[in-house]
Every structure is written in C-alpha cells, then in structure tokens.
Length: 266
Image: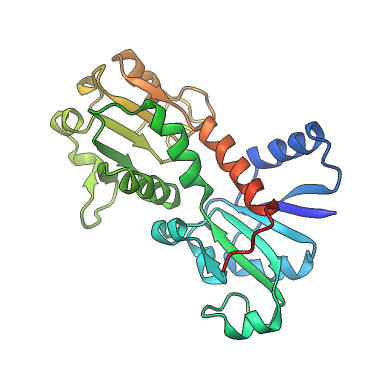
C-alpha cells in the first residue's frame, strides 16, 4: 500500500483527503491511501516520516510551506525561486547518493525528500486563459507562502506586481495606504490572504472597490465560498473574476504526477 498525505495545522477542512480518496475510488487505484497529518510544528516532520515508513508523498499546507525547505534534500527550480514548497516526493536514497549530495535533509535516514511547488503550476494554468494585454501589472494581496507561488508565476510571465500587506515590509504597499489610483493602475488584483474564507464570508480585503472597472481581473485563491465578497464586489463592477478551485484541482493532479512518475531528479 502506497501512502500519501497532507501536513499542516490545523487541518479541519481539507480538500486534499476528499479529493484523493475520491480519485482513488473513481480510477480504481486500490494500492494507495491518503491521510491527514496535523503537525503544529515543522520540527515534527522527521518523527512523522520515521513513524510512517510507507509514505511516498506529502502535500504541504499552512503554516509549513516555507519552514519545510530546510528538511529537503533537493528543491525544484521554481519552488526554490518562490521559496515555498507544497509537494514532497519521498524516495529511497542510496548511501552513495547520500554521501555525495550537496544538501542535507534529515540526517541519518535512508530516504530522500524532493520539494516542488505545484501551486505555481496550478495558478499559472488557471490564470493564463484569462489574461488580456492590459493585465500587465498586478496587486498581490498578502505575502505568505501562497503569495510566493503567485509572484513566481507573475515573474515568469513578465507581469509587474506589487505586494499589499497589513504590516510594513520593504517594497510593499500597505492596505491602509491603498488609493483609487492604485486600483486604476493595476488592472489585476490577486487575493492570497484567507480573508473571506468560510465561515467568514462577510469579510473582504480592504480595498477602494469603487475604483474597479470592467477592465479589471480579480482572482481569489479561496475556493470556499465559491464566490467571496472580494469577487462579488469585483463582479458588481463588471470585472472578470476567478476563484481558486481550478487551481486546487490542477495542483493536486500535478502532485499525483510527481509522486507517480518514474524519473528520478538529479
């Protein structure tokens, strides 16, 4: 039995377990199972792996997408560029490869941890069909692990962006300082914060929404509810809107592809 799962904390509402359990049933995959591993501190990861030697892959969610990096033996280029990982492939590691590896994951164990960011793939594939020539600048709301994947995609696509945060950070805008001129200048707005997630459906990022026009594209990484107040306010102004559900499906399928492919990365 091949074992997969999700690490993060808390994991009270997990898309991943339901998705993969249904996928295994639908596709008649009888030799795999997917479980939730709520670990509050990333320092619990080595113990989790030792207690579950049949683990072949893990998804990683908040708050561990950044902290997990120091435990990995190898990190894919875009994941390294983003500085965040949400997918780990676990494979056996020979003593020879361990001896010559330039990086150190979890010392003293015979497994190799390879890190990927499938959020990057999911976001890019779901965003690109919506882009118009005018969408050459973006406001990225939030600056956590999910925002890192978003910013990586924008950089790869040659789209300028500005992060918006509640607390001061070099180069960022503050929510408190946002003016209609910012909204008019940035015709794409991407919410990577949890503001508006169920059950807090009456909340939305503090923006001057009256400045939004039909030329805008609003993308919310949240998928529950299907239409957040952020998206609803944008739609009322005629903007194109998109939630994070397709991105979630795409990143999950990309994780499965990574876990099951035969190629071993260098």
